[in-house]
Image (cartoon, rainbow, N blue to C red; front, side, top):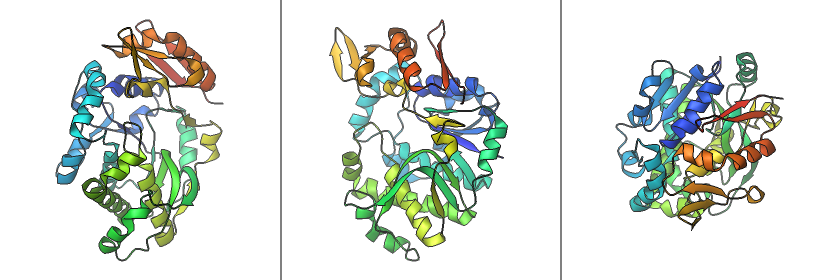
Length: 340
């Protein structure tokens, strides 16, 4: 039996990511756990889908509520318009670091094997294929988009080891971490104690970063988000050294687009800073040869799609040969993974 989860931050992605996913994947959508920072806008879906509030998971987590701030705006247009100004005023970034609270939920539900589905991932709706894939994942194993271990001063291991030695004296701490991208990562824990240790390490690292080394995150990240990759790559290495966990590149199912794949899409522009203003409109430069995406000063998702229909179609036809992209009459984009 497979367990997928998604973490959906922000109001705009409710339409562009959540609604599109459940419509395109009716067979598996009800078996996915959705962790959200604004669960009130999902109210009508709570009976049919497993929707979990991140706020409820960190209700008694004092330092997280102080440093990891959610922008609470239910109107998607206002959310996009004020997103950057909100986080600039708070002197922080969108806290996708709250991803770790998913582990507390899995611990409570005794779920030891689960796979992360990024919001811009495309996946088969065939339950049998998914089950067969999960059966290939052994206990004490993590699969991800994986590179070689690395070490230099700006990675997590370069400045966090001394702190962790005091809190986790029983662990051997590596001098390097894996390079990875968290997208489509599968976690398969040997036992619940290991799952909780993973959370404790992750939470402890972030606490000292937010309180003492926040400049490292701002230096390492040019986009609107705090990366999770370096921290998770470091913890993976800890588990490999101390508990003989297998750290593997994601299986050919994903490299060869058999089950699905992850790819940056036009949806991502919805959050990113508009780079230039011309004739009272904002211009994106996301994909070079594909031209400029236009965003009106007072954008809605529908008007954004309307202004960029041609570019969206060109982009999907070029980059997503295994997907069917359709723009509806009311300017919504419907995307379905077709497989190979």
